[in-house]
Length: 229
Image (tube, rainbow, N blue to C red):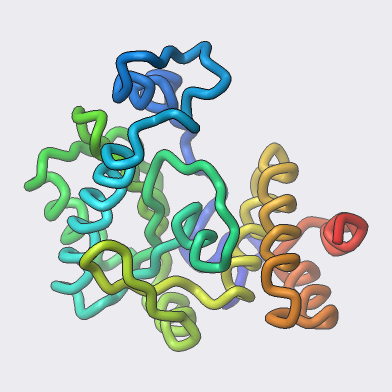
């Protein structure tokens, strides 16, 4: 993985549009008649079957689309963290693909009723009107970067679909890069890195963490991470 001096991973920028409030948590509270957005236990009490069904529906569409592309894509974000024993609330599915495959993935989701609601040079968000469907966020990279990450990726199965997630070092690199491009993400993403390292203590050496932080992260990131371990 290489980053240019413009602070981007060959095709990835940090300019990911924020979800509007109406596209975040609120629709999911309607899944249960006894819940409201003000309930502190709302997510814990959500119907598990319906919530998982929503995840699987979007993942199933994504899995089929990637299968048609010979697997040229990686599951990232909250669902990828779960494969490394870190559970974080997530209301969307994140996928890293080659920029040349953008139109094919978008068309596959449009066929299923999704629409593009946000887009930059390196990012696309697809949204479905149904509350049972999670949004899809696509991060676009060049073919060389994706090929390098695919070589070191790991297979995972979600529902009936076989997908792949980046190796732990690449997951950490993506999070460090996100913080460098958007300092407001520091608290969440550095905390995720800490939890990843705690859950997988032998997967990344101290030297590798320092190298990743120096290459992809903001100044002082490695020290902030180490103080929490």
